[in-house]
Image (cartoon, rainbow, N blue to C red; front, side, top):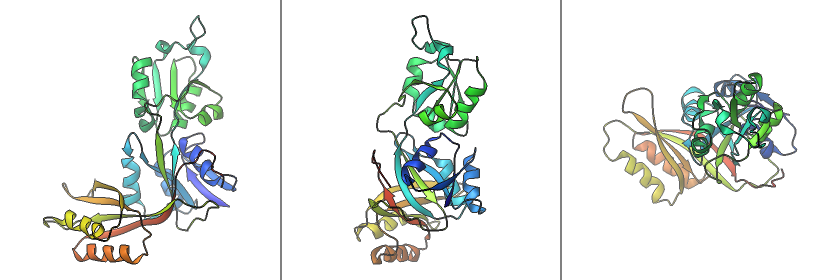
Length: 293
């Protein structure tokens, strides 16, 4: 049975991994901090870790990307997309008006993961602009804090699974600013993962660090992909954390790493004096509401 590390029970990560594996038996290990999720697999306590790395609204989750590149050396094995459905959660009885509706003016604080709360800014400004915003490590941690502090006018933004886990109410459903709010997850671990479902595509993720004082280096790197007609789905610059002004480029390529074209492209990039690191070559799965594994 696969041992999988992830953020706490009731988080979007929890919903997402259940969706990915379906009825396949897995052992879930919950951690409060994303750093502990990474370290669980790095230290052999788990076989895989569930890492959210990109969101439709907020873009890249920079902290998680930096951990993938700078803190651990664990390959990506699977990528999948799952909807981030956030809700306003609390003890409904605390916020009821005389008419029986939710009185949002009674909310003194809204607690959530910073990415989740950022996805709900329009709702917060409209319904509870007076509320203090507090960021914590996960949406489930936010729900737990609200559960353990009754009577303070606190509410959380999180999943319906998180509300059910801690015995609280979903006071407002789907409070995100946009309906097409999806999160991209990767499963990292030392071994390949075989799932029952046919994947949608194959992808390879690499980092490229350019040589210093090489005018036009990035243009030449991109040209190696372009003339080979290798499709890039993402390119992003991140600081190397070694020297001010030094950056590496994270690149997703819609190709399996061992193909002749991609291998040739990597060799050509290295010949330019660039450093190339392969973070993983893996199947990718798009979201299907009734996906069965």
